[in-house]
Length: 161
Image 1 (spheres, rainbow, N blue to C red):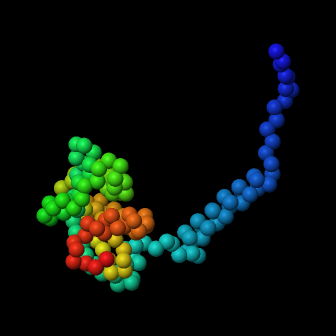
Image 2 (spheres, rainbow, N blue to C red):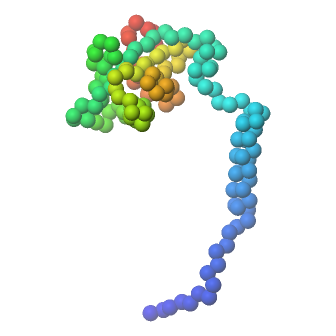
Image 3 (cartoon, rainbow, N blue to C red):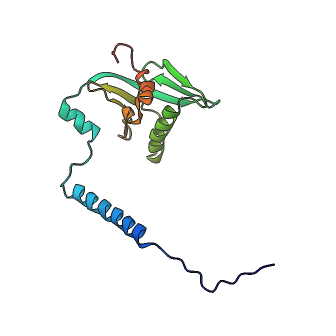
């Protein structure tokens, strides 16, 4: 058996990567402070941008979501209870994730499923899923066109998409 003896274990840190990391942190802090102090505009808030552009509602529907015993998510019209879609396990991942996050916000506030969610299509092409109970909205286009289309297909057929 060979035993090696090490007198000192030295850990060395290279100066250049350390300085680069410090520079990244400094730039991040400067940019954050610049936005806070008003040197740069903040990111657009969808509601404000729609109000400024004069976008109007062109189509809307209330939705209710139900978890069935087999794990399927059933989507119904909030007013008529017409079934708009069923998404089995492994399907409708975007619907599952977005709706569960909204439902989680309701549970935090001690609210239940009494009030339906609102799906709204705007004249500027935006599509918003809104929870009137918590005030939380999800801009579906932010997650890509295929995910937007999943919700757009739940709107009444009268609107041209």
